[in-house]
Structures are given as structure tokens and as C-alpha cells.
Length: 139
Image (tube, rainbow, N blue to C red; front, side, top):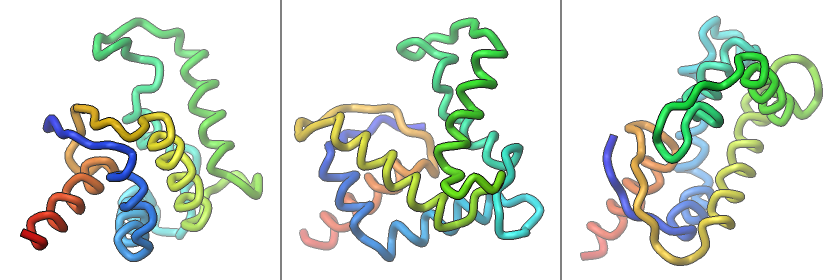
């Protein structure tokens, strides 16, 4: 983990860079696709959803959450990815929903920079590194 400064532009620029975004999505999808069938099952995507820790923390402090409530939240998130209701998520569904979620984060963040703790390998961390690399090349 590292502490980084980013704003909505960092995220939007990453998502709009079709090549960089697609490579990141493809790599994460391949990592999650444990059985290498080209589809993510609920159990495969669940690991990624759990890493978001949607309800398990309150401002960084672990809180006790009802397991049934957590299961319902994760199932609801999976349904958001499964656009065709097939019970699995393909690469395009994963890419489309991840893009939608990242743009929603950017929209909520606004244009003022914020400081965040980011996990290595997260899409936000990749976006920050991409921006830093571009700024380094411009200098």
C-alpha cells in the first residue's frame, strides 16, 4: 500500500486511454479467471469484490458486519457485472462495469486532489502510476 494524491482527471484519463485500460482489465481478468475458461464465476469474482471491503470498514476501522448482509451486497455487485444474466461475467462485461464504476468514482471525487491509501496493483494505483510516468516523460 502507498499514499497517493489523485483527482478525477487521473481516473478519467486512465479509463479513456483505451490501450492502457484494456491491458489492465485483461490482466486482472486473467488473474481472477482461476479455471481459465474465459468467464468469471461468482466465486472467482467474489475474491475481487471482497478486496473492496465495501461494508467491513468504517473510515479504515474494521467493523463487525452481518455475514448475510455481506453476502447480499456481494451478490448484488456480481449482478451489476453480469449484464446478460448468464451467471458468469465475460471480459467485456468486466471491462464495461469496471469502467462505469471508475468513472462514477471520478465523478464523485471532483476536481480537487485527494490523498488516498491505494493497494499495489489496484486500478487506482495503476492510474496514478500511469499519470506519474507521463509527467516524468514530459519533464
